Image 1 (spheres, one colour):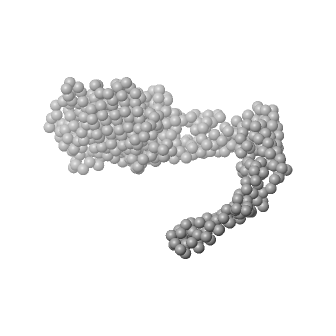
Image 2 (cartoon, helix red, strand yellow; image 1 turned 30 degrees about the horizontal axis):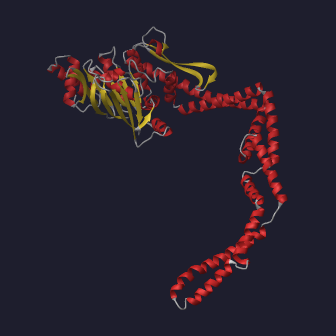
Image 3 (cartoon, helix red, strand yellow; image 1 turned 90 degrees about the vertical axis):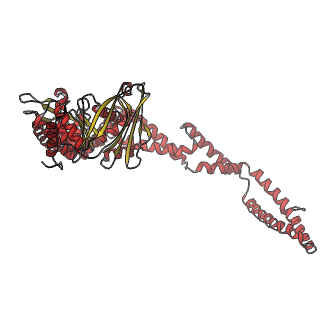
Length: 558
């Protein structure tokens, strides 16, 4: 649900902050006051095309921000989470447009592309007017409306997945048939490579072990010499350090009886004596294990050379040779499968059957829903002043099928009696399109995908009792969705839960648009103006009060 809309320096709006409520809201005002500018501003923040003309004259930039509650927008919540744009319980969209026509978008304070704003907007708002019918005019949008009404969205997703699986199996078979010789050659090369690396039997951890062992064997003579020198110096020579240190400690202990101050030095030297002795023990153990082994050195060097040669051959580092072997074996398994034409054909046939089953179930659901929705929309069209008009949903079979099913969904309409239904996008005028859209939304409101619906100029070409029916429909739609409507008709305005008045004034020679919420008395005045024109009479005020009292659900007495 749209909670707030903030506009700065947009066309003829300097600064505007609007808080919206649930239910049915109308925007009214004189022609040219700027009612549609609010929808244009919302469209801009939802990713529609921006140009320099949207920036108020004399300003450097225009800025529009919209806050949406995510409570009733599961699709938008999923999109934000998938794109790492989620932040709290609300969603803040912001668009800044400079005087050169460049723009920047933000989602919850993070930079976002115009495409991302548009994609999020499709989950949040549907705008229906003479120039903006996001869902109704797109083939994909028509399918989504029908699938939503049929409760078949999950089925449509399953069909799409089954289609992709079938196409992948078909491509695998086709590639295998076309490249059989190349596959056989590749398999032969990989088999030889796998046999060679298997014979090498090189473990992932062996490289480090070989490096350590080679270094020790290659320097064995120096190690032996160094250890023997250390032992000679520490404990085995005539003036061994351990013996000399022991004599010093003994002498100082004796002298400490004459001066206790020497005890500090003795306490330091005694641990050193112990540590030297432990070092001697460690060196002797090491020396017992250490020996010259030219044969083992040659074996290690030969192993290192074999590993190096394999790494150079396969253009990798030695430690990655086991990974090369794993990849070769994996690819061999794939090639073995691709060289079995019968297995590939069975896999393709199974995938095709799974698709046909899923698509068949979706077709059945769409067929049943198309009949029901067509009937409901046709009935609604009669009430909306399109007597004799017909709405149909055509399901054109696709021989090979597609990712979205085995039929093309197309909305057809005949605006008047005696005319054949034709594609909606080709024959409907702006006013007809708005009313057909209203009829569709009313008929399918149980399953509408977006929480906020906006109608602009749905009252074009109608009046009287039909206008009142439009108002009642919009109010009924507002029980399940947030509905906003720009209208010139008092009958529609009288049915609203809340009403906003858009007005234009001139400040310093420049036009400025403003918006204010109307209380009950102000609504009477505004609806009286809509009824009577420039001069508002007591009669028109009385009529306006009666209309508000008769509005469905209004608290005033009839």
